[in-house]
Image 1 (tube, rainbow, N blue to C red):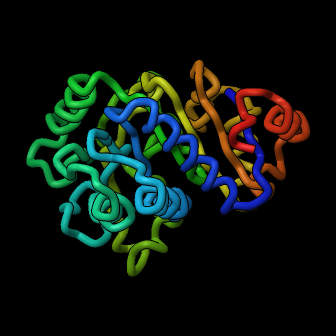
Image 2 (cartoon, rainbow, N blue to C red):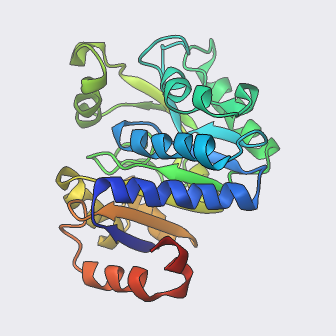
Length: 261
């Protein structure tokens, strides 16, 4: 794992977008894992601008999202399909047929989870997985006690997660209680992980994820096991990192980061 500290939330999102763009230009058929949430909106804005101003090409790209709420159709304005369409898919030249999310309205949810795993496998696996982190330390909806080898499945959402996501709904009572999510094991099989976290409210959980012990209580700690994981944070989210000066030195001095400085 490597941690990169950027001065502002905007700079952190811009760096993540540039890393994604670099991978996409190197491999136009990139299989990209995507995440949702307010933190990701800035990343998708940057990618949309790169498509418009720099001809960043998504035409051959395939995507798989981490999760979807159970019971919400893709046309529901609170669904993650709707979120992705509004923030990225309909703003770039991606073929929407190559964009994949779990079907939260499937008649057989267990079969849908198996189908989703099989679709990822048929695509050759995920090349680059974009991740956020929830206040409970979850990746996707892998809530506390999610097995580190877990696969795509239905998960009950914790009270902390539902409260955090209530801002995107009319009220807490309208937040679904379950979601389909990629498993921790599914996420760890991607070739590269890229996690973005911003804001002081994420500082404590970022420190646990990056520098704390590996535990199923904080699924993001499993990223310490990944051979190629980059965590990008702003100064506020880096507030509890004990080795933040070292992480800053790496970004300022290591040759691999020269083009991004």
